[in-house]
Length: 529
Image 1 (cartoon, helix red, strand yellow):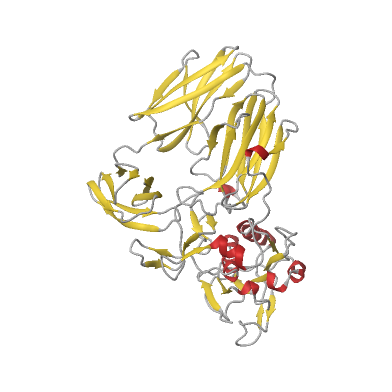
Image 2 (cartoon, helix red, strand yellow):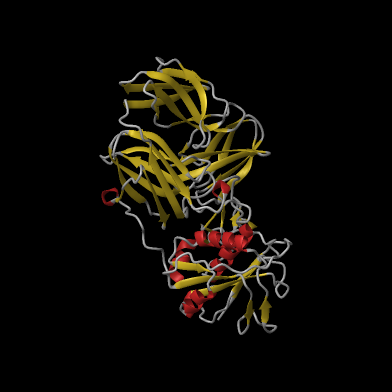
């Protein structure tokens, strides 16, 4: 049998701590197993033993780091019907051709300077050939160890690297390093995910050519004896799972298992009230660290009409804060792409935490905020239909969809306002209104974009019908054109004035173009018809 070998290289040093390994399982009912072995193992009688037995010392990680690394790997494999475990009895009970041992060890001198190593496709060999992650060379960092464990296990499941190519189909790296900064920064698991918050399975070019496309999800679920988990919530609004409030709140958890999965939830508001919902992807720390799904939540009324979609662009979680009337409402939860991550594999687990304010029947029948962009100003009008008198009204703004600050208070009889915003990007607004009976309520959210003026390049049209992209630029900027899988199709430099960029023969669909200068960067979407 031909054995293809891949390594993941990283040169790091660190200090090892010895610890007992906690017993952890991600999906105990699954018969297929990936065993994270942190406490040492003697490897013999495998393809690794060309110089005799290999005696692997423990990982040197303490319980906190072990648990964090485990949780990262478990979330990477959450969509699949496979158990990530630290329990050797689960490993030994699994069918021999449906299990893999990932040896996480400080012992690396037998192999060399690498983050880990694996034989491609060895998961189904049936001879207990393990793969390895070298924790000392990864500085005992739980993020790095978790990324390397998912990556090396991915090799055993039949995956090669996700690589990077330029617009001329020249390979720039065997390891696709992803895109972006911050919470929504993305990289492929089978690329190098050490330095991006959101590492996902990918459908992109492998090392054997820019047109040699590897669909990670298909490879994993067709070659190894397991597929995706069973869907946990209805994918149609007519069959939506029903939830009830207990003490004015409900909390549920779910999993987005496949690229087409959506989860519908039905609930009944017993009174008119302020409704708040936090939709949070599974994470291991602040900033949604280790999350694998960028959540989008849509709200539907009793007639199944879409009311609003909530998806703050720079965050992986979503927040609803609005006023709902009594009656039936629906939520749809799904994973989406963002400015950096493609929509392909935004998959993983999440929780919904909902509550409504207590305080009797509201005096409010309508509180509707509308807005528009006019030049460099944002203009607003709003409607208040209530029995009680308004005592205060404040327009609030948020740059992240989560934290709101006052823009301005307005006279209580005013129903219009305009101003010139200072923050750039997509801004979200709501109106906070207080009444003379002590109640305070919030309007719907609206989103208005504040352009950066004339100090950045701009597309002349976001609809591309020919083979040239026209860009107006105030100076010298770099640009790169990407498809939705993150593949670079074109790159170069803009000059001052009008620029005509040869886009070649693009397929119909959506693309992203990124302009950059130093640390500053801007992204726009365009559609080729």
